[in-house]
View (tube, rainbow over the protein chains, first blue to last red):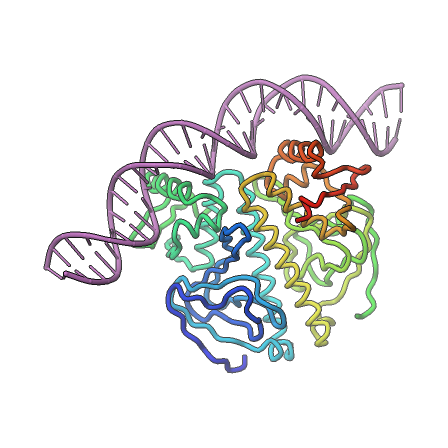
Length: 188
Length: 188
DNA sequence: CGCAGGATTGATATTACTCAACCGTGGTGG
DNA sequence: CCACCACGGTTGAGTAATATCAATCCTGCG
């Protein structure tokens, strides 16, 4: 892949905002990013989480329609879409990225359609663990309760209560800070 | 675009099923299609609606992970992904298709995160009207209540009740069969 | 004309939302 | 170094909404 300028972002920094011109495609090299949209009614809808290797949007010509914020310190490189599409390899890479993203959105979608709060959050935990990287069911969750609520379509109180119950039942254990260990039951 | 064999499907026919090999990409030439996944718990999650011009999946090498069923009689042409990626125009077309699909999934996602049933269904009606084609707020809805429920994450009873209330309030009018007219209020 | 699948409607139970108070912790300034 | 403050998180009580269960009604089609 062609050399590309690398930018660093601090935790909580905005990587790009809705309304900005697309152009070069931002690829996340390290760190974790949250993608969200601001709704007309003021609500914040989390669209996706991104981990190392993910492209953060696919707008070559148009205007980006969502926000990207660093959950952890991040490195981002920008690639010209033209360069990518020019080579067979680049085009294939781009297509694979979009296909993966689409699959992830569908997983998110399926999660949102689950009726119960517990089921929804279980799906979310698995999804987040996959996105943000896990080892043996141990993973970091650099999201606030509100962000989790905006991801799952629940309220922060319901998120809090469900997590509390899981800790009581030892389905989920907080090891330290924001690092959690999920049990076999959840990993399924 | 290269010539491609065209297949016809009757209403309710399965165009492809999850588990089939991807390969040539199916493009819908006419008609309407519903894309859905079967969940482990037996539930059916509607992922998307597709109208003329849409590609029904993007699996070139792997295995398709969802089902496509004809809502109306359909014509489908299959295009070799290799041929598309080989030309700049083809690759650009493919990318635009995927970007559009992604945007649609995100709209769906946003809809699912709305709390109230009425808001969700209002979003759905607008989305369906856009996908399936509308003129002056008049559109066809070739979906059963159950399919609408599977799309919106509600129960078919709630869908039925909400539609009934809208008809009482003249927010939505059934002109004939499955043709509806939405009022200004909904179109917003 | 009769049948079958979808749709409607009603009564009730369950669930998550809302409102509100309180707790803990990390960070900052005296 | 400690005290305080602010923000995120927790917990509780009551309410509103939708899911559930169940009976009945259409409607298109054979």
